[in-house]
Image (cartoon, rainbow, N blue to C red; front, side, top):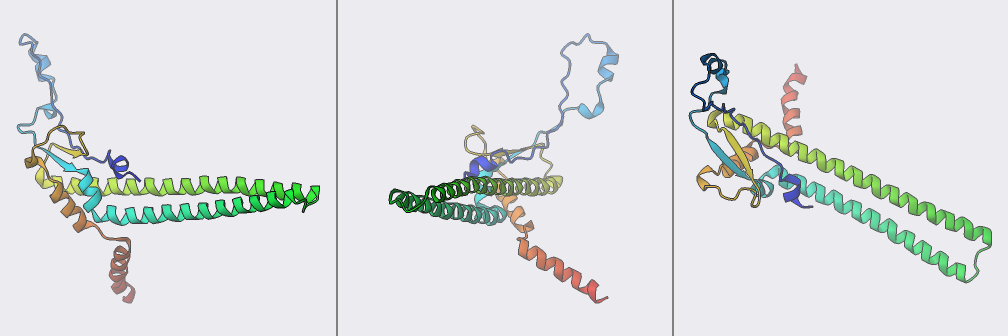
Length: 213
């Protein structure tokens, strides 16, 4: 799995609206007044960026779920490989006995039909497991994006950045490290992150006093 491809699009941008003033000084005054006040350009444009690759390797949610997906993917590969080997072995045995005239015509046709059905079933299983794995991956990507967006929305209430960019590879040709907030974001994400098991324990603990009442 290529994490860079999976998560390259992760970014949150809160862009301030900038009004374009007219260069024509002779424009009627009523046209100038008709501009909405909220479109005035901000006095200061604050920009920051986050290294996506660092989030992928240091955000605990990413590391935990990557292991889950890797294990699930490996299980799928093992399941399909085992069934493929069994089918190939059965086909080889059939061919060998067929050459030895071990079957009647009706038996041979029956076994051949059975092998063909097993092959179709294996293809269908492959497709179903692939779809399930893709759905799980999409669910993870959505959860990852939501967690980052939710954190940055809270984080930016105090920081008040106009724009927060995602830096992945060379998609930004140059960026001054003074605008790098990656470490702050990762620290905040990890502080807010609760693994599924820990979250369930917390909910159970909080529900206990209510149950006693």
